[in-house]
Amino acid sequence: MRIAQIAPLHEAVPPQLYGGTERVVSYLTEALVAEGHDVTLFASGDSRTQAHLEPAWPRAMRLDPSISDPLAPHLLLLEKVRRAASRFDVLHFHLSYLPFSTFSQLAVPFVSTLHGRLDLPELQPVFDAFPDAPVVSISSSQRSQLPQANWLGTIYHGLPEHLLGPQPQTGPPYLAFLGRICPEKRVDLAIEIAARAKQRLRIAAKVDRADQAYFGSVIEPLLSRPHVEFVGEIDETQKAAFLAGASALLFPIDWAEPFGLAMIEAMACGTPVVAFNRGSVPEVITDGVTGFIVDGVQDAVEALTRIDSLSRKEIRAQFVARFTSRRMAREYLDIYTMLTRSSRLFGSPQVGRR
Picture 1: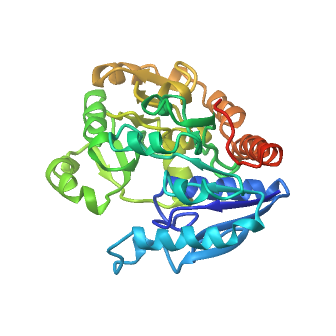
Picture 2: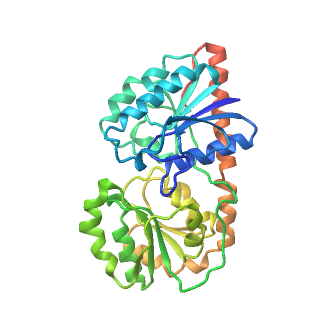
Picture 3: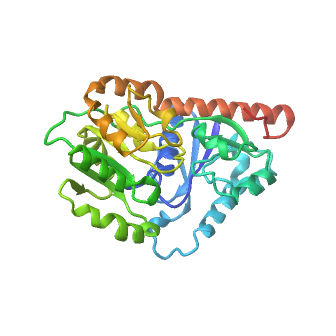
């Protein structure tokens, strides 16, 4: 199958450091290539892939301080894809609703995976205007805000099976926080949980420009506490040791997280997750098997007293069974096949809801 993957331009594919959507696009693209498909990746020019790379902007916008209008490079990206669309059997966008207007009018089937939050009121009229635009959710809970969307399926994220794995735990024990520092990720609660549990906390996290004020006023004063170590942003080569060495990953989110890649990254290392019961958490974590789903700080502290009852071998096995990129790619291939068959039968890429 001739497949186009269209990534955001904020980060390279894969990102050099932190980055969720572009990292998932990379894992999916490489898994599709490994399955024997002809894949073209439309992304920033500093991306790395075994697929055919079509650079839509010279480098990731995050690394280009001269960019003031992030929409302009994405408009060029969409036009580049439009002009090349006839070369492909299916177009797979990772740009939220941006493709809807143009690509709903083309004969080539397309689908958009929605990676972000959908609880914003301004999204309602957009999806009302494009009720037939085919979309995929990354968790069932993500769908609840937009029941009118043309959902073709829910496909959980996946990682390459051998990208991350268990490692011997050496050195003093610690809890881990991995991700981005922002109000909804609640690293402040992770610090509180670790303090009450009398455990050390290591924080490997990115601080976006938009969150600098929050970081400076709320989080930075907490980093001087003796039980806290701020590691900063880490890359893929550092992630396995960081996660595998932890007693548990703390995931005290305060919002409806659409998926939460850090949870399956921890699971790949055999590391249990203690997560607040929000968003996708009950779909990703099997309570009492791959971690504990909790309802607050004190509940999390109590869960940590039972963390050694969980089998790290079983946590790794659950990751292999449920969250590999090969599984993800094959589920997307089912969607692509459905779209292309519908296009051949009815002359339109639109298909019914699932």
